Length: 119
Image (cartoon, rainbow, N blue to C red; front, side, top):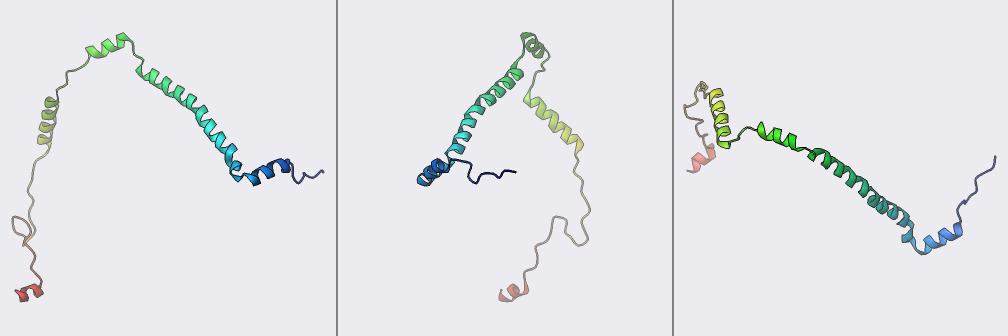
């Protein structure tokens, strides 16, 4: 079985160039990425154009049908509907307080004993 050659590329041409200008080593990769970006731009633009055309395509008959069946909308009417529905479903209900708790909330806590002596 033949063995692979140790250095299949023309070492003299590439190695001298890359040793002299090491920044050129990544240039093919950068060119590929930038070129692919410009190439893909056409495909993505076509995709978005077709999607926009599909969404906005509506003939006059469909537009007239939507306009005839449309209900008049009044924001004040909707507000009163929602507020009346909320008033019907909710009712404030008092609960019994725990023993020793005053009717109107929690009493203020006692100051620490150190503060009582200093006053």
